[in-house]
Image (tube, rainbow, N blue to C red; front, side, top):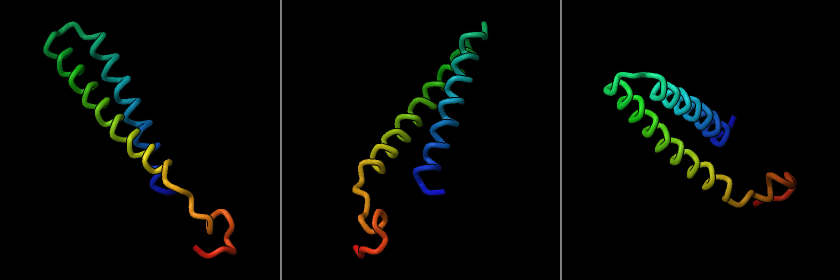
Length: 74
């Protein structure tokens, strides 16, 4: 497994966490609890944005030709 795979796994976990916190912030009636879940949801969104930027940066890198055609040397 490479770094990109791990980033996608982390992204998936962060998205699931954000959904979880959002659902809780909608369901709870206690305003303090709602504020906490809303803050946690927003923090997860910040993490999601960072992960998406990292994934985009990795995917934008040129692919080494020697990986595509193993007989060639870089």
